[in-house]
Length: 269
Image (cartoon, rainbow, N blue to C red; front, side, top):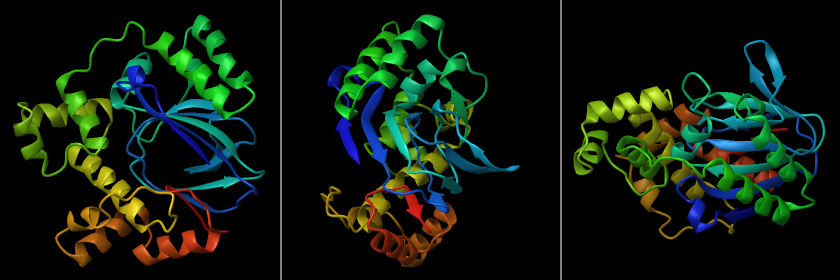
């Protein structure tokens, strides 16, 4: 697993880049909720997601909206995928031509990009390794966002929530930022398709996962803080099970058994 933060000038639109290269195929995996939108590019085999009609391959290069629920996944050969983690402002700017909200959708990039932008994007696919892919992606993103307007206040506030800079009840967040709770709710539902409260829960889940994951490479500045956001242990256990379908111990045991560095994917077989 490779990871690198985005260049400072791109931070309003993208926060980081990552690349996952599995050593084996996995027949049964669980994809836990991720609150931020992602640009995901399959460099190797197809990645299959459980849909109403069964397992279906995800688009090879797509804008993935925030995921609100846990879903099953599957690969038939070892997975190799390059990812850019976007802000909501970045995904809203990039996905403007697409109709509807972002949550739980995968929109092929070919549906979003004009021909000239697709040609520039091809350099990402042609890059020989992670470092070169980051350079090519940053160059393409600068082109894609060169005329982007500044974020509206509600979108900026939601990005602060997902970046863990704003926590607490929705009404307190809205009041502190000088925006009505109703305006925040309407913007969140229109852009993402989820309520602000649901987004906050999924953002809080990310902080809990970082505490529970047994790998020492994760940064834990204050490992107890995320757990203190819950009223008690029962509240924590119920919320975790509701969002992931797993108990706290099942998540940690799965990570110990597999030895993987992934946070949001649980390998079950």
